[in-house]
Image 1 (cartoon, rainbow, N blue to C red):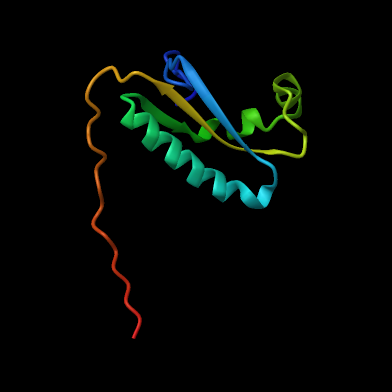
Image 2 (image 1 turned 180 degrees about the vertical axis):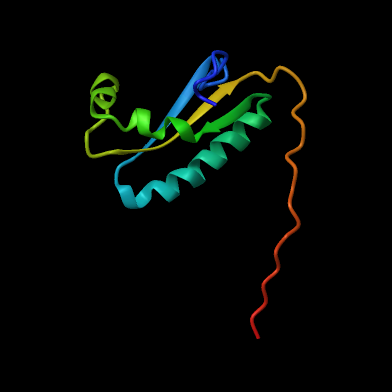
Length: 102
């Protein structure tokens, strides 16, 4: 996918928000913050897209130096933000797998 000529990692978004965790054990908490950020952006009429493929890129030492990010911080998530260009098709859903314990 990334090798295609028309591939755009950030979907041509005018802004990208980078979320870093101050410890590797707190990355999951950053995901919760990202969810709230994306819901707030939607309420303001903006579209967002979490970019998981960017994690290795923004965790590199030379990138952290360029962005003035402490070396001990862990990149949690990049979120592309912009105005929607149209309707987004619903995500197909699989039937729920129900597991019960008796």
